[in-house]
Image 1 (cartoon, rainbow, N blue to C red):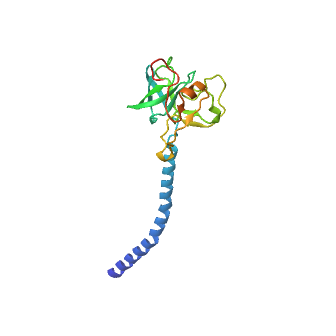
Image 2: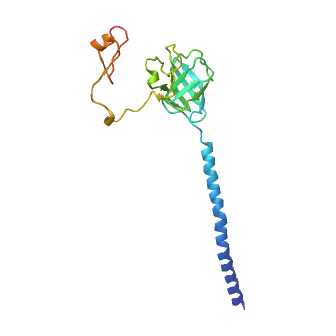
Length: 206
């Protein structure tokens, strides 16, 4: 009698296990997928966007400005802009000092800067306008026109720091860069891609 009851109980347990297992798997799988999807979406939403890191000035020594950030540090050569300042002042990251602090070089005078002043990461190196519209114009190091001829009508910009082109794209032929200045083009012509001094004091290698 006991053997018959035990066999009946074991059979009932096997049947119930076979019926319940697929239901558990089917019900738990969507929950796992939902949990995984929501976790990945939360990570993407929390990730900071480029150019939104804010810092504050902690030291000013001449043209060298140290800036401390509460969040991620901007990469080296990135441009930072001092907030609530006129004229505009741009800093370039030159070194990571540790303790969420970067050492920067000011592209203009630092008179009037104070500790605690807010600085915004631009998210990229300094960019200047390029294209045919820039021909004959005079711009400063941050791409602003200084020839009193109004703004440069172009949306094309390029970073002042760029990787050198590969050797296959370089030309070995020497060409003259015509300046339109007859004395220069005749007596000391410029070679495209070369370096030569035009303005400077006496005895500096012009």
